[in-house]
Image 1 (cartoon, rainbow, N blue to C red):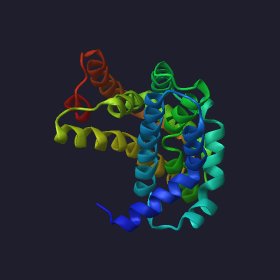
Image 2: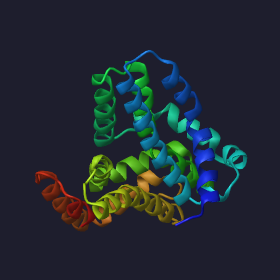
Image 3: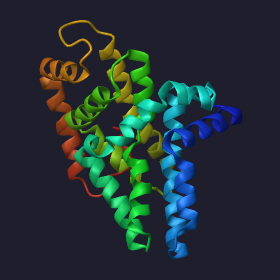
Image 4: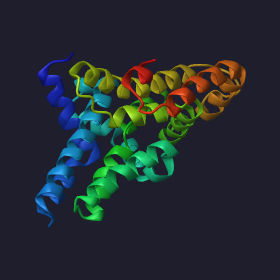
Length: 242
């Protein structure tokens, strides 16, 4: 829903923020079977697409890449540095599966892990922009983001949507939108909490715990619906949409 100029701007901005140029050079020059190289490039492109979408959703697509780097470059780097400790169980399993699939194709382990790390930092750009807007530390927001995903099961739903590739083109569009929507839900939730006053003001993790306690019955009802979807085989796009 945006113009080519905005897409190009967001592409360059995301490339700079997540260090894609270094990844591309490493993939181009390393010794490996060509089928493995193609898979690495394909997975790297898939991960970058998510970062571009994240940037567009957070309103960064209209900023120059240089201004974007000045505003959130340090925050993205901080989140990237702590990516391993910030991953929830579902996200970590998803990233490990991606790396192992590339290694099985003959990709060097270090490069497979480097590309998989691009998936591990999915959401870092949105969190960095949210930190810039709210004045809350990026790592504090990241911990709250993960806690909310674990609490409601949204991290599981997002991970499932990310690996789906339905043959029907309409279902593919649905799945692609769902993966971003599950992330955007959490961003918007954290943004609303950041604007509230009270004893947990400025502490998003405490604010989530307070909210969960006050809405325990609704949270439990939602978790039961998630559990039904988790037990289904296979999990379909309609389940995730519901």
